Amino acid sequence: MEKNPSHADNLPRLNRISGQIDGIKKMIEDERYCIDIINQIRAARSALKAVEMNILNKHLMHCVAHSLGSAPEALQKAEELKNLFARVDE
Image 1 (cartoon, rainbow, N blue to C red):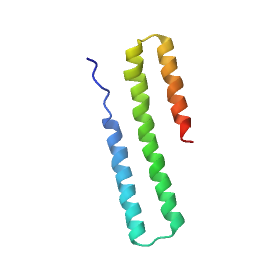
Image 2: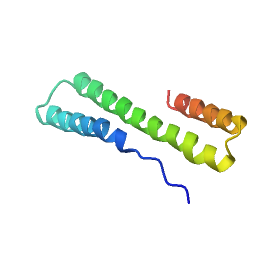
Image 3: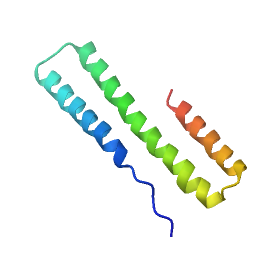
Image 4: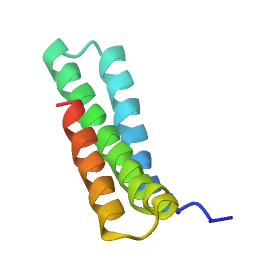
């Protein structure tokens, strides 16, 4: 059975996102300006999307491509899917 790819490289980014969330909670407790809070929420969402895309990319290029075989067409189709998913939330 094929081993799953490591996602440990995402942990520092997730730790920063956790800090951002804590900061947002503090901003709410401090009754900060709505737009400032929204800007921080958007930044955290963007950072979380980057983690999601990193994991999706590994899944497509490792797990999916491996299951389809290493033919160039399989890698090309996995790349097409990655690009499609990157545009979905835009």
